[in-house]
Length: 130
View (cartoon, rainbow, N blue to C red):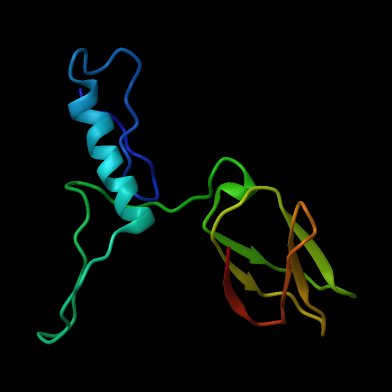
């Protein structure tokens, strides 16, 4: 039986009771290599020969969807009409790509739960924050 994979990056989701005695080599170890690459991998790709399509896990087709909670997503898109600066608290540390697609001449203010660091996203800006 083939285990399902996550929709965004193809991490193996072992079925309950699947892969008896091979769970580590079939599921955990390949996942750790993929997760390591997602966080810290460096891949050099030559574009000298023209356009390139990057490789993906065999048989995997991405069907992007959000994580289970708002803060478990790499990209945060802010939309809507705002009448003053809008503050968004990031409850977990991490790296986010934040896109301010709001209308109105105001900023989206990102802050951590400790209030010690804040960053403003002007309208129409895309910013990577940590």
